[in-house]
Image (tube, rainbow, N blue to C red; front, side, top):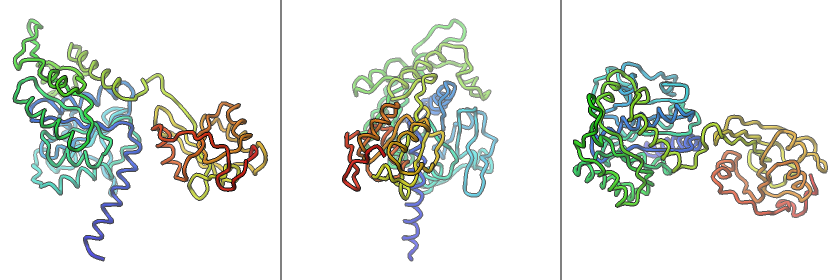
Length: 400
């Protein structure tokens, strides 16, 4: 077999691993900027920290391989990423926030990476395939400025990723933001919103705000392009001090902290997110034969029983149902505490038993793996056909 064929197979295998991981991530956000020096990494870092402080499980990935900043902002510069075999273990910044940066793989913190495009693309894919992230509510990706290899790789690899664009108010920055907007349009990446950073200077002596770089440019650009404006963050010397002391701005008792929380609130309102403290929990049953949905509800080999909390799978069981007899299996499903069941076809009597016991029945599902079916179900892509026949045998299950 040729070397190119082996490479193609390896690439496809890696793509499958990446896709399996991304199915466990509810929201993927890439933080972009048209030019450097606008505070993009600071915004990305504090988005991750504020969300994690509110109880969301967050992964923060720094894909700026030439100028990684995340480790420095979080005080992780001199720490190496732990590995076991081919697996990479992220830094655990707090109980809800995991962090990965190329900085953690360098022999010396100040070593430069002199890489061309293919190597950069490879390391980004490796950070998605070889890192033990686990299920996440958010994956926040800090991309380098511009519209080069890194944001393009993110857009092509994470097809449901959304962009947050960071800018400063002056026109030279806004011109580059417009390029970022057009980039997102070309690669079909939705823009979640724009953040205007360094919007005014807060005097540490008098507390007044002075518009050194003007103000309002980011909001106007958002309005012109009909993009949500998430908010503005002022220049504050305490942010610089906090960064140098490895403290994030969530530790500051300042107006800037209020502004950042306002950005988080708008972000949450723009996404289909359950507020923490009001999580939805469900237990989904799926009848299986040979690992896929069994269209004959009463004669399946096993049931996948999957517990979901706040959109994340927290437990998955494979249980053998009791022997086939009228009414037995639907009652057994309800006895397991299931709230939902996904079936191909089901008899009217069985459906009535389940519904009377508070189990939501969705009929007409295709033969597929339980993971894929659950993913479609949670995205609202499985619609109840109302079909109560047994697809395989063409007769009613009669309550089986």
